[in-house]
Length: 72
Image: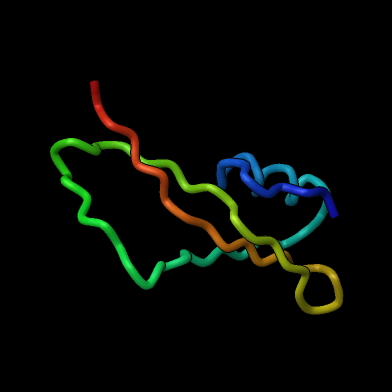
């Protein structure tokens, strides 16, 4: 299995599916979340922070976080 840590979710999913894996993803929810002002942070991208093989090495579970981008 290829290492897809720190890649955007779309890119990581494409790489793993090309290699024949089924991909599941789940959102990591930190215990403490800072307030995100929706007006300031309009866009976000999801990044992989953990990858794990499941069920007979055919399914990959990716844990992801959201990274917000400030609009300039």
